[in-house]
Length: 256
Image 1 (cartoon, rainbow, N blue to C red):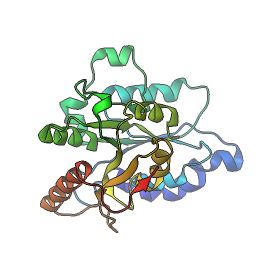
Image 2: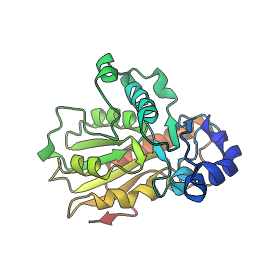
Image 3: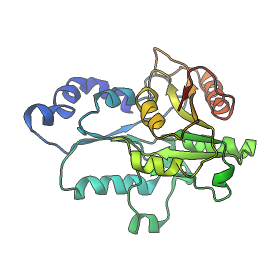
């Protein structure tokens, strides 16, 4: 579990995140940290994504959250074939290892490449008819797809941000332009509001929104603990955040 990475926080802060800018010492260390809210409690849910996002600046590291088998393959391959060395933090999946939806055809391995942003995969979603865009990262994407099917929400498109830092502005903006009639954008995450990527990506998302669009948040409320310790409460929270992703924008809303 990635939760125990905080035992190495001193090394991460002093060497991995800032070693190159302080001493000119580059490194290509890869930290694969299992991360995912699956009802296993506060010590088995979060690799503290927010802490790595806070350390990210000056292109000092890569922070990725791949959601398919081929994405993991290609991001590791990219790390090895690049002509420079930067540390990489991979928020690796847990339940997705057994999720058939996260598998990839062989052609994705042989002909594909790592995608920093994955756009809408459902051909039935028509760009001009989309009223809301849900952006997310990680396994919550698969939960959102199921919820959309339940609601038969054909006017909702979904974007997966596979690389959180450096933020892929060009790829994200290109996807957003496919939905000129969308008036609402929602960032959805499993983590509590004060954790995860929300506070760090909201200005990136806002920057790439179209004029007139509004940005809202869907996720767990702010919490001192990474997760709850009761499975039924976890399930209630998960259902609530998914409903929130498709419901009326509430609370903090940013307008473009």
